[in-house]
Image (tube, rainbow, N blue to C red):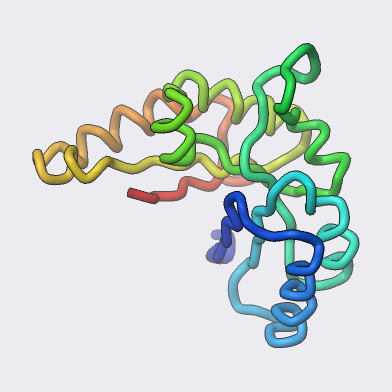
Length: 164
């Protein structure tokens, strides 16, 4: 069984000055009992990976496009994330599902792109407050998991994150 994972998502926060947090976290926890992953804005991944090199801290991306390349202005491919030093990428975050209308099928294709680039896919599932209040949490999670998890997924390349 793999170690537990503590992952932090910086979302749309942080500039180069915030990267000092990586050194502080690494110094405070040089041999953590859990895997530690920081998912940063794409603009920081390359520098953060350099800082985290040799430490117990891994660096990940916050999303990727399903395509390997192409005319997708503002998007980033899984291969680009890997090239910048990421080891993982979040797909299916509730904010992406809500704000960008991403479906579970979209998430599954992004997870496949992550696998193709050698990244671990962190597949997020979770219900909305309205779904929780309606008592449909388990049905929503079941549907999201079934639709978001590619057949190629296994314990070596996938993490399921519950984030309601």
